[in-house]
Length: 163
Image (cartoon, rainbow, N blue to C red; front, side, top):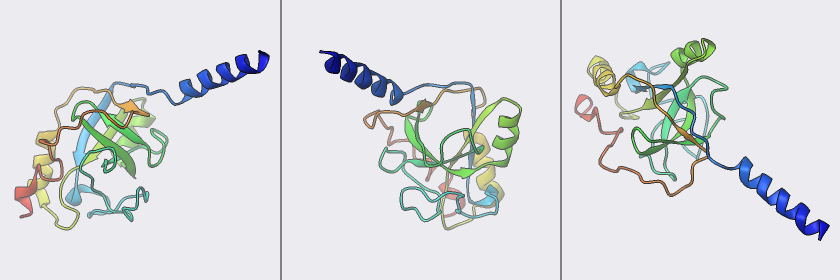
C-alpha cells in the first residue's frame, strides 16, 4: 500500500513538472535576413536538424525560429504563440532581447522571410508593420495538438520584397 501511495505521488509530481505554463508580458517583434546579426539566415543554435538556418512553418513538428535573450527560454525549447496561433522554437539570440531581459522585460523576436534572399529595408519595414506593439503571453511546454493557423505564413508575409 505504501508503495502505491509513493508511486501515485511521484506520478503526480512528474505530471506537474511537464505541465505547460503561460508567462505573459512579452514584447513580440519580427526579424529576418536583412536585420539578423550578421545579415542572413544563420542561427546561434542548431535545433531540429536545421543546421543553423532559420525557418519553420509554425507547426509543432516545424516550429518557426524564435530569437530571444540567452536564459529567457531553454535552447531549442518549443513554445506556443497564441498571438499567431503558431509554435516557435528558441534557435537564435537577439541583442535587443538581451538588453530588455537585463532590464526585466521579456522579449522574443520571430523569424519571417526568406532563408536565401535579403529583402533589404523594404523587408525590415514589413517586419515593423507586423509588430503590433503591446505585450503578449506564450505557452511553455505546450501540448503538440494546439491549433495552428496555416493562413498566417510568416515566411511569406514579406515575400514581395525578395521575389
